[in-house]
Image (cartoon, rainbow, N blue to C red; front, side, top):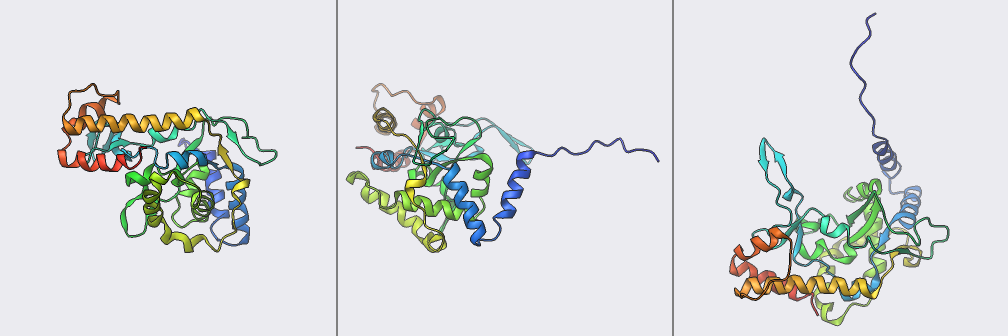
Length: 288
C-alpha cells in the first residue's frame, strides 16, 4: 500500500492545556470551584489598592480597539492606526497601553511558597479585562473608556488562564468578578473620585447574583503588584499630561503641547469641538 505523503497537522501544547482546563471547569460544581479558586489564588496578580485610591481609572482618554493595528479583513487592507484618536477623541489601543503598566513592579503577597513573590512578570502574562459583557450595554466593557482602564476591571493572568476568563459566564470569569468585588468594592478611594467610581460600579452590580453563591475569596490570600510612591505619582502625572494636551487642542491654544504619541498628537486637533469638550469633561473627572 502506498503511504500518504501528506504531513500531519501540528498540535500546540498550550492549546491542549487550555482545552483540558476548559473541560475540567465546564460544570460549576464543588470540584470546579476548588480548581478555579486555586488557579486564581496561585496565578492572578492584582493592581495595588493604593493605585485604586488615587488613580481608579488609569487611562480615561483611551479605549480598546483591536482593529487599530494594520490588518486585512474581507480582502480590504486597513492601515496601522494604533494610538490615533477615534471620532470621539479617545486614543485607540489594542491593550498595549495597559499591559505594560505594572511591569516595573515586584509581586507581593502572603502566599507562602509562591514562585511569584519578589519577582516581576515576564512573558506569557496577559492584562485581562474581568468584565467582558455589560448588562444593558451593547458595547464590550473594554470598549467603554472608563471601564477599559478601571483598576478593578483588570487582572494579570498567564495566557491560558486569561483565555478561560473570556468564556462568558464561565467559572473563571465569575470567580474573578467575585475576587475583584472582595478586593476593591469597598476599598478607600479619593473623595474626588467617589461619585464617579460608584457610577462605574453600578454598571457592574447586575452581575452580583452570578457569583455570590461561589466560595468566598479572602483578598489577603491573593497576589498584588507592590505599590511605590513613584509609581502612583507617575500614573497621576501621565493623566495630567493627557488632560493638558486635550485642553490645548480643545481651546485652540498655541501653547506648547505635552508630548503624546505621534498619531494622537496629529489627529486630536482634527476632532470636532463638541467631541473634544465631552472628552475633556470625562478626563477631568479623574485628575486631582
